[in-house]
Length: 565
Image (cartoon, rainbow, N blue to C red; front, side, top):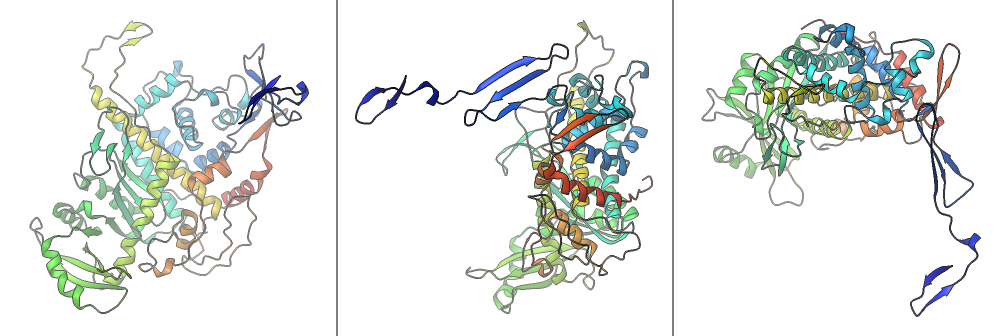
């Protein structure tokens, strides 16, 4: 018997039992040997559809780990780290080598599993096979389990050693510089622009180093990010407290990165910054190191007085650049300043701002500096990708270990828990930048193959035949004559930042966000089949075209390494 509610009256109404909606039937059972839960579901809208969970871990939703493992091996970044990192563990009592722990952590983060250890993938077939160095059927055997959560936590503590942390930072810079070379056919570039900016990372609770920031209206960490905005490669990151200003102690972070890029990648290096980095000391340091810079200058009364006559009497043009010289009170010398006046149709006043630079006025006139500075929007866009695709969880807290196997630990030295926590959070941040860079390399490989060493950048090449891609993936069949155009396409560089400032970017190209790349290419379902000497993973047909395209481009990927620095 069922009751139906009528607005006029309530009365019982009888219907046959067979016509009543079927409840959702869920049957749980456990495998008698392995203890794995088997799930069987009968759906209410159609009882002809049955859903069951596969036993023996023969299915996976993370088949993309195999592609990522191939990219990691091709770059050689794992070998670079394991050769240099100090591992104080006893080899006789070590089950998981350092290389496997690093590989497991990187793959988990790249596949979207944010925590150090997740029970859902602890015995996953794809993760077990992709992190294995064995051959044959043993890659997915019953003993191929991932490292446990305590082991991964000890890995963070191991990497937080000062020498190991410096190697992690070097790995981030090395990977980005090598990708810049690969995407230029192994040749040095004429110019590389390094964007330096602060990237807020939300903090929850009273985490060490996190502070409330009045501008962002929340509690954050405020690390510095150095990246190449035109290509999307991240060159370095420095963890800093939430209330520290951008310009404070930034010279020691910027200068080594600029020197390394100039030594191995490009003939000319330009550092691009916003008005938060206005400092006479920073400008003087960059000038002493022969590093070009371009930054926005904060307005003040003196600058507005200098610009007043040009704003009133300027001709009716879209953008006007006026060359000026200016010396602030904190500056030890006079510097070149460019006044930029942009008309705003429908507005009462024009937009005006100032740029300060040490670049040669003949090689870099004002009309060239304006679109160059406008490309800072690309770097901010890539920062958004870093935070969305790989949310850095800086959650370490000052909790020094007091017991080991239920026995108190006797320490002969005083533990600086604050320093340990800061180093561990720095490790998490460096690993997150490695994860983003590897995902970015994989995304670029999907969109276009790297140019060969005998191709000349900027010369017109015959466009390849368009490749049909999986549903949801953008097509890249438009001809791109230059290497930079290909990079714009793969990283979203053609996104319109300001059509008036950048006439070469008036056409918006399709591109794939890293989050979409993960969903369409990496988070792919697969079923495992065992054979005598090998294991086969059958991936979903919807991803076959994307994987075919990725692997065709991957065969042409020739990695170019940089020497020690």
